Picture (cartoon, rainbow, N blue to C red):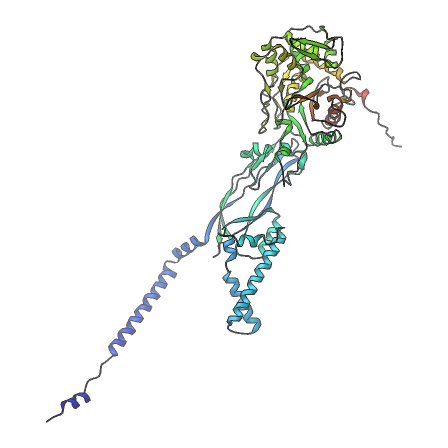
Length: 611
């Protein structure tokens, strides 16, 4: 009997794996061919597509700041210019993360210095500590360069949640920006911008104004002509690295368009002269503030407009609105006796008084239950002495001779109660009550400058009607040759007659002997105005005002000086403001090379003849 079990176990056939091996090898080779083909497709056939996709992830468009237009005076001297600066921005999220590339470089340097191929865990900790220490030193150096408080940036890194953007310095010197860039800190960006610089400082600050950190006008002509001065930003395409840092400029997409320049009517030489004399007067008289305006009598151009106190637009820390408000154009006051020449002119022009009219003043004039008083009893006065002695009683009598509608119409045509429309933002309108509500006493007080208010500019503008033979000029802060909006208010005969009366104010027995101008005839009128308090007019607070023109024979300039609350023992316009008029007018006429018309009054200069 045969033993098939043993035989079967001994002769059992073995499995053959050769087919599986061949299949696996063929499969792997096919995969390799597919991968190689894909690589050829991506790197050779579709190379442009890949490059475009990569560029889309690394290329970006950024804004390019435009140059802001200059502001110049009438002679081309710069009053506001833009200079290139750098602004430093930080991305705290990015700065706080590790810069892997720099860390790898430090590890490589560590291995080289210690001649090892692989870092131990202890070595890695050491390298990481060195990395943090180096970054901390760079941050501290940056804080010192930018004059930032210690740990200012550390505080940004410890905020929760972390911000993705913050400025740490605006408009710094470009060289300082280059030093920051050399620190090679991730998350720190240098932006190119422009900074506004004002060469004349506080002298023209109230007229020119200033811009904010984004180079947008905030006050003065910078604000009023923002659209003209502001350029159009450009665009450029840049290349960023993996950490979104700009590493190269690729192309300009749109070039920035510079803003247009603005040429003012201001003459910086006269502006400085007026600024200096007003500053001295406000200080000497211990006054609260002051304002001064110089107008061209022939075309209404504003040649100077200054204020005290002033401010430096190049350094505006803790700047208050009360400092940068342009008082000469935006603040109003009751003009007082400076309007009396207009009352005389209006009465003459309307035929309500004759040129040879006289007024028996007696120092007091009762109007109903109210009383008008003069400083002294001047007795009987002719028109010239009404102006020379500044009689409230006499001009009140004149005012009551004129119909309210006519009287109001003259004041209105002179610009009282309406904006001077110089183009300066925020300039005052002033106020003038409608004649329909006037009583007799209202007409009386209006005749000597109470019951209405105006700015120094509005008062100076009104004086053009006397200076230019009856023609009232519009005013302008922009340089111009002609005044297309001039309008006649008085006849030339009336204007010249009143102007002649005003010359007597500067005589020895007039109210403004201190206003005389060496070498030139001059005419003007004083105003000493009580200020309004919480309970009516105060007894010890005044506006000291003087308005005048020169040369009186053919006026070229008009100057109005207003000093608020002089408190050094003098408060009359003829003693406080008139001397300022004299000094500024004399200097300005010489700057403009106006020939003297009274050479006999010029001071003698001793000269040594050449041998």
